[in-house]
Length: 151
Image (cartoon, rainbow, N blue to C red; front, side):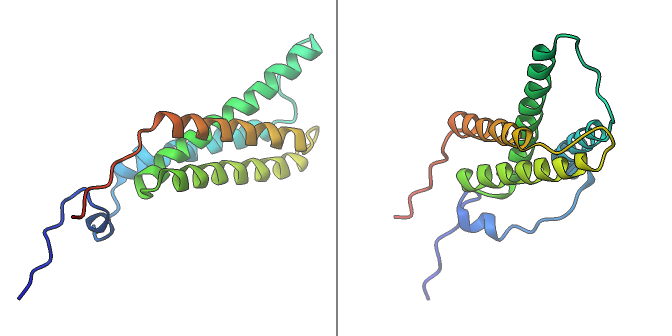
């Protein structure tokens, strides 16, 4: 009788058959950072008024740079989660971007219900740009894994 070839630990097939169990350490190091970052974003967007500068254009630039950087960080935190669970790095980047973008849309909707704040499509576009550029850099810097030869 023919036996199937032995599977190595790093092959795609063996990865699919690994049993995953919940561990608090895994949760706290992988999932907790993006959830805490989202909580910080939520808290900041719930403030009726954020401190500002007297120089209007500089205040505008700093707040939008905060949007860009904040959602770039969120996308990178989701990238850590998706890369652990999805082998295809492009799919992982797309999912991380989509997660950050959805949260940005939710945040803008949330801001519309906060007195003194409003939703802004410009903010959403800046959030999306930060997330997209972060994922572009992650794809550029993350090496492509070579698939083992099947022959």
